[in-house]
Length: 587
Image (cartoon, rainbow, N blue to C red; front, side, top):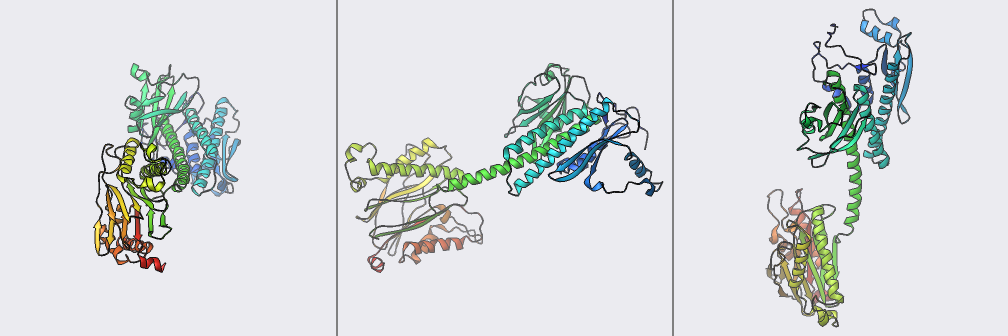
């Protein structure tokens, strides 16, 4: 091996040892660290990581070693090694040094191995050796904590119980130990970790360990102004010294040198890691190699924290979604009047756990039936929030009508029966109140289409108002009618005035209310929509049957039309059948 030049020799610092990294050229120039070493930290192989650290640490007249459990039974007799195997014989001679300190590293009950310190025969236990033992002890505890954290995270991924609070506290301890180890390895006086916020625009101080340093300035940092942190996030490292007022602004008082490294996980940068010293120091090979390795190790720890929290959040959200789905409209909607004059059957299905489709049937006394079908913009939770607000308002206003009368006319209607009150009910006014509520409650991009109406079973009429919803289908004998729309979607313009229409019904008539998840169901083969025509054609084939049979005909044909198409939407269909005298006699 070529003799090192003076520029290559590593100085021994105050602890009595130095680090010799493999990323040194024969001329003393820095070479980018071997990517294999970085992969060691990322791939969480503790045994390999400890072996690499032991190779990097050079203690005068002593040696730091890691022996795995698998090494314990190996034969170390020098007599079996040929003389020409000089390098192997040298390594084995080094193993004959007496062990004066050791610590076991375990993963649960399983032993990973031992970290030990050997010294030359006749050497005394000087301060440098004692400091090296302290460092080895820190590495031992750090490896044990790391393996325990890794095991708890693996248990979490497998669905086994794990204490969230304890595990996160353990992570904080492990991060602090990592920073203290880096300080000891390099002789710096302090280290600080800044965490990047979710939107990636600012940093916040999370950990600061030091030996007698002053308070750290700028614990919250805007990346537009934090030039050294920004440079480290872009170029992996930046160096700050107290040469100028601008640089001193980012260093603790009396600190001369600061080095900032990027900390990243598998998803990208998550923060910066600073090291501070009161002495003026240039970043040398040893510092760069060790500190960058520690930054990568810190990123690996945080990668597992992110996974841990994502898993915990996933479980929490899954529970909350299950509870929230219980408040959603019933998937199956059925109603038949006491006199069996009207028969209703429908289904409201969401693409996800929560959806934005609304389908409600509310009987009001013996004579009236209120119906509302709607479709909120978007999908899943955002749509469900809009739909829930409208649904709550619908029930609140219907309850107000049942018990107190109409708004602004309570004195006139308070003493009237429910049938007398509903005789003057106007769906257009009802829709205007819903619209004003939604405009005041939601943003401009959150809106809803809806159609609501009131069946008068005595007069055989359906009075309705349509706010931008797909046109209901009315089948009467051989006639097919698409009921009109009366205005804009709900939630866009609070001052809009809606209109209403009344349809006369006959025995055997069929009304189909639906959302665009049914009419816009697309065929994967032909890329054609199911459309209103498909709904009407399917309903007409079974219009002499009851409401459930008509619904099944529509639903099955829609499913057959869109078979194999993964792009689906919330889908709702409601069939209302006015029973004929023949059907009443059969039932």
